[in-house]
Length: 240
Image (cartoon, rainbow, N blue to C red; front, side, top):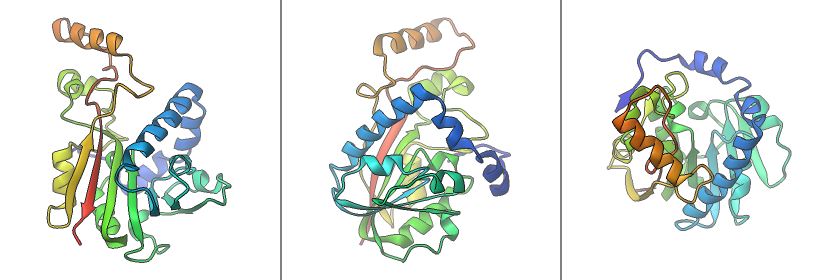
């Protein structure tokens, strides 16, 4: 496992993320790209499950949930109250609070729990996985996406200039293998994994490859570009 030490306490992280989502939404181009990526991530998980009850952990205003098929009964939870209360949508049920302590949900009540761009932000991700395992139905699915892949080529070459290296925001960094370790083989099986790049709105293959090759031969101080393998998606099914 790869963890940043020291890292902020839960209280420190909560303070840091106040206003985080509103600041992200104010960046128009990135918001548009993110919405396109929501569709890609939604299409990927729909290959494995297409209906049932879903909980999105770190749901923000529910934008990712909206990209999922209407055949899902959609729930979300986020620690930032403003992002949840700003969403008015009768197709979603959103809650605010710290997910591991939440009393909003019953055990064995969800077919799918998603962590989109979330697990790397958590100071103690194991307690989130414990809670998810408790809430999932037998053979329920956990879906990670928009997750930085710490064994990617860009992470290895650019190191602390990797575009996903954020010591405050990302106190834990993962690969598919370490996600398997976190989830415990006795509780979850890996169903599939993928590394979306070419079809994403962030890809510029010729330019990105040129930057990486140049960096290999003539190191600079720039951050890494988007690239194959930088972000991962992984689907795990609980063992009934």
